Length: 392
Ligand SMILES: *Cc1c(COP(=O)(O)O)cnc(C)c1O
Image 1 (tube, rainbow, N blue to C red):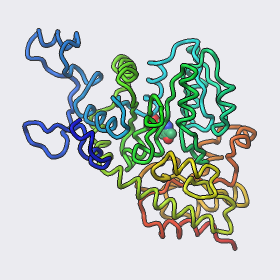
Image 2 (image 1 turned 90 degrees about the vertical axis):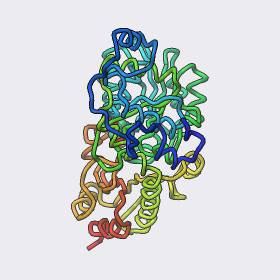
Image 3 (image 1 turned 45 degrees about the horizontal axis):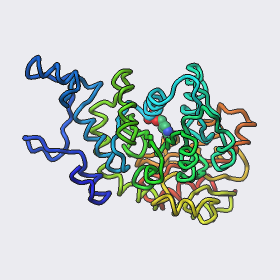
Image 4 (image 1 turned 180 degrees about the horizontal axis):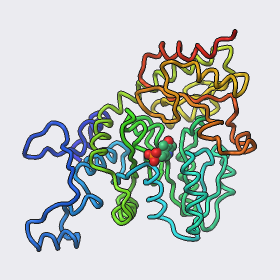
């Protein structure tokens, strides 16, 4: 808390760490499942939550707590709860805040597992979801029902980089007595802080840019003390807690987050402009381009434009696959958010299970290629993409 009034980069490096008497410079990793009490009375007091302190690492762990305090400080939330994965963060939030009979209105441009969680699993417990076009405000309004309790979206979306106005949707949710949760995985707090625009909860897959180097799976929920303590109740009871080792890796990731997100954004912006000038490329989706339909919103709502872009090549799947198969540096994988650039063909991978009609409706065309721009030299990335874009 002592750093809370200091700059973002300072908080990213220092928040949450209180040096132990050993005087360590880097945060220690508390790899212990349980904690020992001085006597029976102390054990009783901790279990009764009369005194703060650790009991068991499913409940709390000192290394995880440093991560939680640091991410809370970066998002501007009262509290953060670390989770075993991004999906565990979404599941725990829904379990904590919803009950049978409740309804979710969600953007349809969502991470695939989130769609499955809502559609296939939560529905079994009586929680239903209506999916809407993220850019159609009227569709959001019309989907609201008396029992709607949660609005949920990612902005920008993946792979099309559609933006949603967080403040407008927060107003809509609150007028209706519902909560707004924003999955801030692609921007991270370095580029976008949804709580400042009225969101109630921020969800993270720490697996992506927070780690930034593709090492660990983890997640987080950030928001008010009241909401997060509900989420923590589910975590400590049901068990999808963050591992202390992973928390430590994410702490190292957070220390460079500010620098990395600026570098990812700068490289992606340059690559987007370059792709825009390639004759084989029909369209580039990147919020930093003036041609992006929501460029103005991106300038207003985001601090930078991020590391994700997609583009459409003329010639459909065959041409898209040609670009992908010609790369020598960029990794062919659906993962994203790391130092290594990745390339993927959404229509046959991440969105392959959608029907052709669903893909057409959501704009995932056969010629679409998505790139998560890493930290390699941007000139090398251009050259790598140029192999498969060349017309013979
Ligand atoms: C990866 C991802 C998730 C899921 O996170 P995991 O850590 O893989 O469980 C959720 N939302 C978005 C936007 C993601 O990209």
